[in-house]
Length: 370
Image 1 (tube, rainbow, N blue to C red):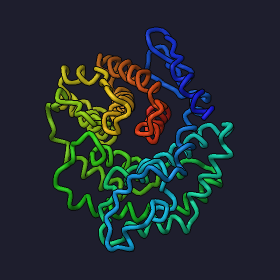
Image 2: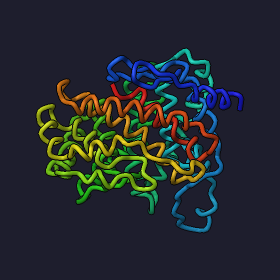
Image 3: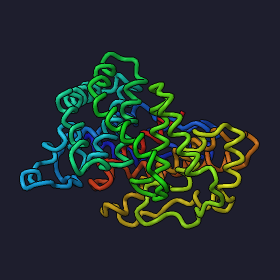
């Protein structure tokens, strides 16, 4: 509790660097083109998944029961590795966050606690049971595609971290990773229309993380399939209705998430042509308006804090591939920082509806867009 109290106090201590807001959690260079997480910020944000990753209740299992005996299983019995943080996908990206922090900041005061938790979660027998869950009768599409995406992002982090611990954890995760990857390949063949929602089933988000994983794991066949699918779904899109955003429980911007995928899929010149047709100038300016979060104790409305964080990582990624002379580059860079500065103080707001997942979004926005 003392750690969380310190987190709340420090998150309110924002200062101004040039024309841009900053804090002890992140630094911003003079032109807003680079945002970096500080080690102090990493240490304090780590407190949130450490607090909940082994907390079984409250829990939203979203489990479909096949029988009476199946109905009475506890979250830990259903998911021995990923039972905490309220739901399966939040536990998975909480694990990703801890791996990333351990990789980037190996001397954090919390590093021993992080290693112990990850060692427990990555026990091969537990992960085999997680894998078997997806093979049961009613779970073929379970956690499609949000949980799938974060599972691949978790394995990508282990692949990219050249460390003996990471290699051991990666090996233990392979049955589950391969299961999810095969489900991705099967789904790509039958998905006719994209999900353009601002919540979990968003197709563009899932494909972006799948493509990142495929490239990191040198799976050229999977990467080609993802790129081909993205082109089929999105290459002809024009005039995104971004003025309709956000919906009341969005944690993704459908239009920015699509653009963030396509900048991965297309070359720079191809992306510029596509982006010019896709994103109206007034629509882009509309997306720089910060979302209003009226009630952070509401588990759906608090999603809008996550929207600010995901907008930030999309804006950073898109801005990076725009030419220096493009005025949209500076607009996106500045807006990305403003979205971060507004939402990071809310990550540890004292309400479990946000605390069980927002730190992962913050870490991705602050450290993963490089």
